[in-house]
Image (cartoon, rainbow, N blue to C red):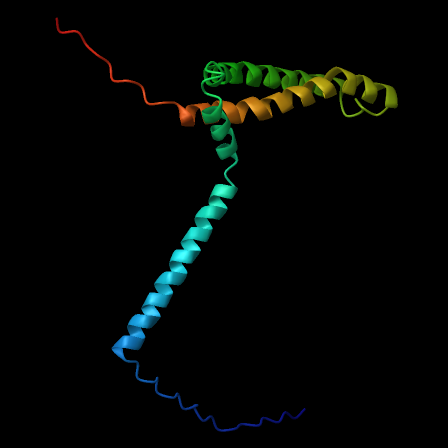
Length: 154
């Protein structure tokens, strides 16, 4: 078996010297770079603000603070109760499926019975949590600063 190798000589390409840049041109380039970076920063801030889901809820809390003064505190109090109820329902659902085994939902009747008992309640409670949760978080973020405590030295 014969193999042929072709070898050619390598000539390194000549790199042209960079053009001389004057101080004025350099400062103009730096100014343009700074302007582009400012534009990018502005755009990034707008994008971040648009993706802030809590901003909508904070705005709602601020807008209706006088009309519904009890709403922020109520949401913060209700959230753990709702979460506990949701967790209890999921735990009951899981325990029932474990008790019944792998064929728990094989028939149309057992599936419908399972959905009747858990589906609607779990879905509705989940929707309520999806509203109250962000409101409770927004309430925490929009709380007015607590007034300084006054001690009587009297």
